[in-house]
Image 1 (cartoon, one colour):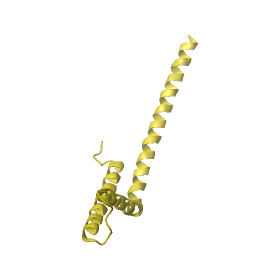
Image 2 (cartoon, rainbow, N blue to C red; image 1 turned 120 degrees about the horizontal axis):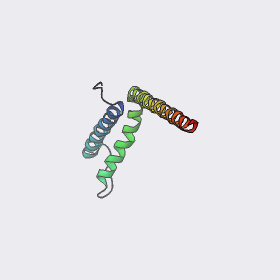
Image 3 (cartoon, one colour; image 1 turned 135 degrees about the vertical axis):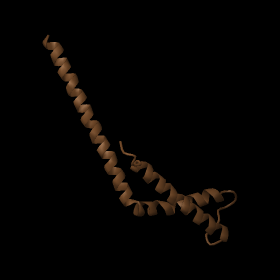
Image 4 (cartoon, rainbow, N blue to C red; image 1 turned 135 degrees about the horizontal axis):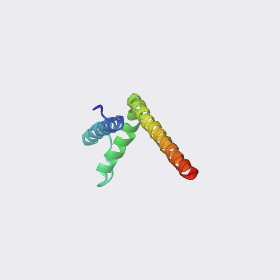
Length: 102
């Protein structure tokens, strides 16, 4: 058993880090007045929305390689599960055929 971290966890952590970085950057820009602040008490939601809009395309571009690794890992696990299911079905069919033969 290897101690290699799950590609899904790694991708999610990297995506979250990009969002947090964008959130901090947008918060600073709003605080300094470079980016307009929201109306009333919606400032935190405004900052989160802007950070989400900025971080989504950044994640799409910057995490392409990690997303491919994650996809390969997930598809490998799915193929393994399909093979095990087919083996179990074959064993059940063989046991059923043997029971019917007696």
